[in-house]
Image 1 (tube, each protein chain N blue to C red):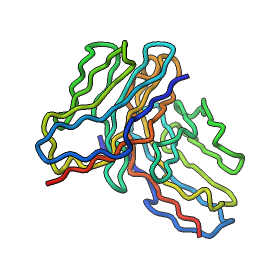
Image 2: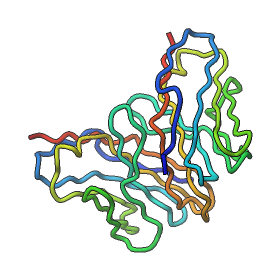
Image 3: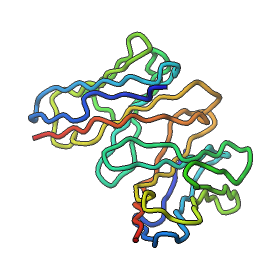
Image 4: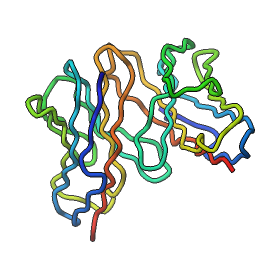
Length: 116
Length: 113
């Protein structure tokens, strides 16, 4: 179990640029989640995959955000035309399949995005 | 819909004192409940989870939590605080059908030497 890996750890970019983050989940985990966390807040759910299928998307996820998990393994989160309000920590988590939501999620260390 | 409320955004305790972090949940059905800890610039680490087995759940690092349905609470406790316990703690709830987790706003624990 090598844990959930996220890359890069930090990203600084100018407003209006596109950014892409990568998440490698724990290898045997079928489910993968993206969250956004701002200072002083808990993580907010963005989207969730089961294998390669994107099953849920939050209303927080504007059309500038897109996530993929093409082969059911790693996932990417892209933000187009970044805005100041996109500055946050983006967390990825993975879990195994179980009935309902009782399987705990295992988190990566996140990608901190700063928009200049 | 599920949600959790963490009472007290900041808690300070002396080293060796009891730690009590409060979490109340709102759910129309018996929920799954979790406590996570987050150190600066790190992801969240699972401390413990309640999945409707025993109401008193023991976790890592000496932490435990008790599910009280009558009070809709899932407070986190530790008998004796250690300096290394200083961190941000999040309570989370998940439903029996949805796979979404809903996190509280967190409680920052400070341990005073």
